[in-house]
Amino acid sequence: ALNTDNIQSDILVGMKKSQELFYFFKINDAATFKSKMSSDIIALITTTTEILSVDTQPVTAVNLAFSQHGLDTLGVTDDLGDPNFTNGQLSDLTGDLPGPIGDDESTWLPEFTAGTIDGVFLLASDTVDNIDTQLASIQSTLGSSITTLYQIQGAARPGSEAGHEHFGFMDGISQPAVNGFTNPIYPGQTPVDAGLFLVGEASDPNLAARPASGWATDGSFLVFRQLQQLVPEFNEFLTTHPLDQDTLTPEEGSELLGARMVGRWKSGAPIFLTPTQDDPVLAADPTRNNNFDYLDNSTQSNVDNHFNQSQCPFGAHIRKVHPRGDLDPSVENPHFIIRSSIPYGPELTASENATGISANDRGLAFVAYQSDISNGFTFLQNVWINSVGFPFGKYDPTVGVDPIIGTLNGLGAPKNISGLDPAVPDLDQTDVWHDVVLPTDYVISKGGEYFFSPSLNGLAFIAGA
Ligand code: N7H
Image (cartoon, rainbow, N blue to C red):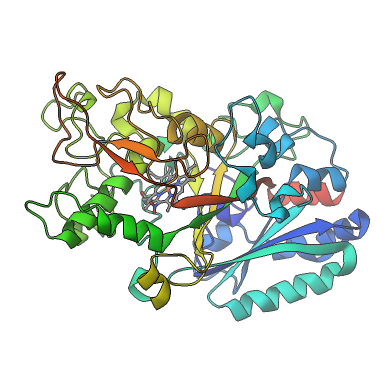
């Protein structure tokens, strides 16, 4: 079993609250910061054990993670064994291996391009007031040893949209199961080793590269991304390109297009199981809503699935990032991440709806945990999401980039996506594949950073460094 008293809460469980602040800071005075860590801050950090029971959940959950720049500033000299973390996220815009993550630096906020972020506090609670109170207390403890660089206030969307991201789709349904931790494991959930997410576990593929003293054990790399979503523009595209106009109303045709781009209906029901209409009962049933594999129902072979996109386009968002039966598990499993994202920004205004133009910044405060960033986030973004050929080996060799978050070289370039239209999903060799062309990007990266979320023991080590 895992040492859940030692692991920060967000990594395996999430923050379990409707409001979450990401507070990015710079360290001015390492000695004072470390002494306050020991005397006050570490006691505030919420563990996995605490978040699991409502009886022990704090009013405001607190997690703390550092960038490489922050660890350097604090005098931690050990190499954590993850080159992407060491070099920072900005260097993955132009780096060689594992290649560019597709962002255009011109869309990054100066807060993220400056390379000065040392750490981030994650503060989560039921109200923004609680968060502000906790933040004020932390700031008063740390005084001038830190400076605020940037903050993003995340929030669950209101009412019946709770749990849905800003395009309107239910999020947070599918996560890998962690061996020795996740219980129950629902049908369709893939059990994988804890070492894919937690550094220093026996199953950590990079165990030999970790600090010999073991202080990094039970920590995880936190990939943060501020992903702006152009919601009225996305909605306008769906409205003006309804599918299957012979049998569906324009509204239904637009809804179907959105569902085929994501791979789930807005309710969360997977289109592979219910391809022509939404099924909210299925969506709400955790024993069924993740139980599918993209394999042919009758033969359980993937032969048919090399040319048949009737149940789900090859390039649907959730198929790109978790191809299930399209790949052998030994090939796919190293690339699982645990997601802990939350929407940020206001609801759509009436005038944004009317004009189809975003006037406010809103999107996803994207958080993903893994023990190897080059196998997790950057691999998914570069090799699967942004590759027009992935899933490889399909009858149509140009599947297209991920229609939700993929980018072609060149910001906002039009993107051809195969199989979105179910009227022509299953073609023989003489037919021409019919692509739907997305005129531009509806998700724009505003930047991000790589952090290390240490264990409680690891935080104590850092404080003593
Ligand atoms: Fe995605 N969306 O609303 O369209 N995502 N995602 N994501 N995502 C998922 O199954 C979305 C992003 C993954 O196991 C769902 O839990 C949006 C990045 C993975 O079958 C929905 C953005 C990366 C899964 C969305 C965004 C991923 C997943 C269905 C950005 C990785 C699990 C809910 C603004 C680099 C797939 C669910 C599985 C699911 C959306 C970003 C990865 C609705 C809007 C950057 C691994």
